[in-house]
Image (tube, rainbow, N blue to C red; front, side, top):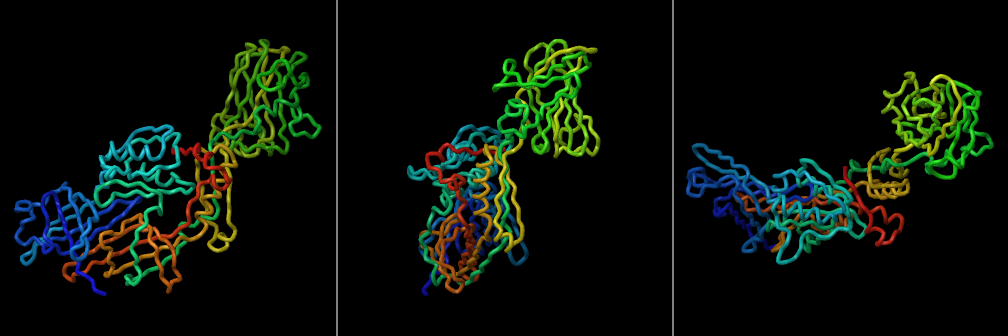
Length: 533
């Protein structure tokens, strides 16, 4: 194979470094998870590139690096000088110049801002243009491509631009596939595009010298639990428990009076929601009225449902104190007192329950918040008396929607490997189930990685860039597939006159958007939203 020797053109500010002065040149190109960087070692015997030299290279200069073969020397990166290292001895003098591509601008500033109902590409354009000062158009062509994702609410405080764009890249989708790449192009333009949408036409057949093939299970997850918004109620119909005296539908009243003088009934006249309320009447003189709901086998885990809600109305014969008692499955009580005016108006009551709120309750140390089987609500007279009070719209609230998806074969092959995520934009167990299945299908199998090295790759005018899609055919490894380039390294050594190109490539399944699993139409997906907290 006839192969021309490497050629480089390195420029810092208005200084072009002759190729004869360059000892080694190392360019690392990255995308999405990192920005590109470089290191150039230059001969500096006469100090001309030093602080007092005629061609002094200073910190902060913008520059460019071209690497190729012979007369073909394409631009591979636009850079900024960030570090200078001088090494001098009686027999040698070198200057090492280090820095990053213009992507370093994504780390200069932090952002405190909130976006509501904005498309992913709109947010990225604003960040890149107004905060980073990078161009995202080339000859009238927009390089930040559209997404199908609208973010209902994104709010950040003192967050680097890079981190916000990375979040959008990891969550936005196009045509049902989640995942974008972003990179600073060789000419310094910012590009944002769906993964595997940039195809590099180079044919690497007979150009690869060393291949390292790897599969690992580091990222495998075969049990995925998804939690949605904390808005699930028990019962789901928040008024169901106050529409009947027999909530278990077993022929036995579950609403009962806790005193011998009390009478419990449904009231269709005095109510707040639905058809009925639960009325307690102290028919004969007593010191209090007590209304009890027995949940029986329908116990509630208050660690998952951390709010108890109800509406209450009292006649004026009662005082303002109301007692709420919760009974666990082991015979223990937890007690809470609050004041409600006895003004014959409905009052909404919301009380924190569960272990996170237990300091507001009087209870024994062994009280079990996970198995609540009885609720008591009691109103007190100033001394003794008779009167009525009503309860309506009683329910536990603020449990997160949730679903779990598992793959038994993956668990058998690689052991149980779990993932838990919270998404505030999922508003049913069904939506959580779709998300769990989407993530499970994406994560249940190992990912393939390739590392390719060669000193004979000839890419002509089209350098290989991170984010490119390459097709590789390696019969010895039974590989004939498309891979995504994650990083590229160009290393030029003037002493050996070699150009080594190293590629890291990955092959992974597509992360399909969860709506795909419900076979919903594309129109339905356009209204789907995502949020970040």
